[in-house]
Structures are given as C-alpha cells and as structure tokens.
Length: 367
Figure 1 (spheres, rainbow, N blue to C red):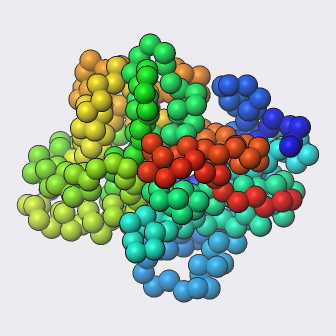
Figure 2: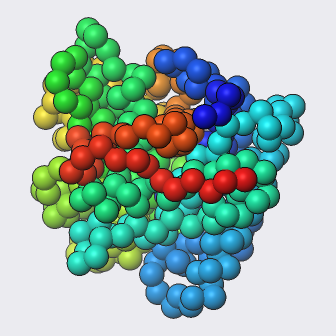
C-alpha cells in the first residue's frame, strides 16, 4: 500500500483539445488540488485522433502508433506538471489515466470501448505506477463503461439537505443526480460542446465558441432544434452512454439536409440550444434543487444563461461553489479512481452504468 496520498489524474476528453493533468491530495474526504495544467496535443496528432474517431480509413499501423504517441504526450504532461510543482515521481502514489476515447460501442454484439494512450509508455516515461483501462471492467460486468466521473460526484458533492445534480459538459454531457437519500444515478444526456466545436471550426476555423459569443449572434431555429431532439437516443432508458460515434459532423450535416437553409450563426445558436434543452429535459425529471456545472461548458456564458432560464427556479452554478474548479473535476475523478484500484477497493458503478456488481476499475502497470 503506498504511503503517499498524492495522485495524478490524466484525461483527454471528447473535444480532443489537450491533456488535462492534475496532482491531487486524496488523504481526506474532499480532494485537495495541488497543481493542474492542460497540455495541447500537437496538431498532427489531434488530427489523427479525430480521423480515428470517424472510424474510416483506419490502418492498424496508425492505430498502434497513435496509441504510443498519445502515451508519450500523457507522460510528457505528467512530467511537466511535476516539474512545475517541484515534485518528483517518488512523491506520487500512482497515475490514473483515462486516455483518449476514439470509439465507444457499449451495445454491440461484443461491447467495447477503446481508449488510446499506452499505459506502459506512461509508466515507463514517468517512473510512476499507472492505472488505466478504467472502463473495460465495467463493460465486462454488463455496464455501459460510462459515465464514470459521477463516482467522484457521488463521493464528494452529495448534500444532506438538497437534491443536487451535477452536469459535466465536455464534448458529451452527462448528468449525475444526487438525492438526499436513496440511490444516485447518472448517464450521458447527449452532446455538450462536440457539435458546436465542429460547426465553428468549419466556418470560422476556431476550436471552440468562447463564451458562446458566436451563438449569441444567431437565433435558434425551432424546426432544426426539433429535428435534432428527435434523435432516438433521447428516448432510450438509462443507463445509457454515447459519443462521437453518434453525435458528429456527419450526423449534423444529415440533419441540416432535412430543413431549409439556415445561416451559420443561427445553426450555432441552435446547437447551443440543443445542448441546453437535451440537458434540461432530463434534469426536470428529478426535481433537483441545485445544479452544479463542470467541464468546459461551465465557461460558456450563453449556455449557462440558457440552462438557468430553462431550469428556473433551480439554482445553476459552477462546481467552484462546491470547492472544485470545473476545469479539473474529471481529471480529479480519474486520480480518485486510481486510488481505489491501488487500494484494492471495489467500486459500485451499477447506478451509473448498469454493471451487475461492484468491481475493481482498471489495470495496474507497475513503474
């Protein structure tokens, strides 16, 4: 059993905008963030990841080389953060690496989820024991493999007084419902930033819509919004999870082909409304009194205002009010999961993923 209480969490999310890396002290109930940084992925590597996410024209060589290249980038990010925080590998109990999801297929004949970022490479290049492949065991136990960040939400954000919900708005959005008593639940609600990022990159060559400024210049188109919300995923019962395999540029272009021509900024405004409505229509089922937002979407001023309007009188605020910066909640979650695995704890993912029984999460790659 490690004597250190310090863990590193690593993740590159659905938006593929960089490696989020944190050092967190997990000695006490509430994680204490000691250091954090995001390391952008090289442009050519990001482009290769996005091609793999499309599932077309893939070679085994590209898949294998991308796996190793991402492992090196994850290790590089961890080493850079340790250096900036004046810490050494010996100070860290373990790394919890989510990796980079390139495909998620929990309901195929042989359910699987594929995260790249070779953990052997991370362990070798950092000198730190690494916990990875955190979703695979959940799938083997009959779960969806996602969402897993709600495990941290349940552990640290639950209230004794209010029904709370937490929504993580990354590329994909997921909600966690935290009742005062009884079982928690969580699932993916649908797109977060992924479609808005695609559309602004296509038209303005920008990676994301800062503060929702471009969306604010347009007006939501109700016909298109209804078409987007008609996707069958939204009528499926939980547990459920999704990703770029469904919600991607091709899917959006097909939907756009069924409606009259709309200006680019009106499409962006509609995509923002789509994210807000797909989240709010789920949250209204649970009568949450407080909603706390994490992930990149917490910085989208227009999106936050839209959620406040749709969910009145529910309080809507970033997780900063609960003591954790919204940018780092997910990376902290994977550090927390690594601690559970290193300590040999079984984790009850069932309320969130549908897994049949508590399970160990991930494999351990010794330094």
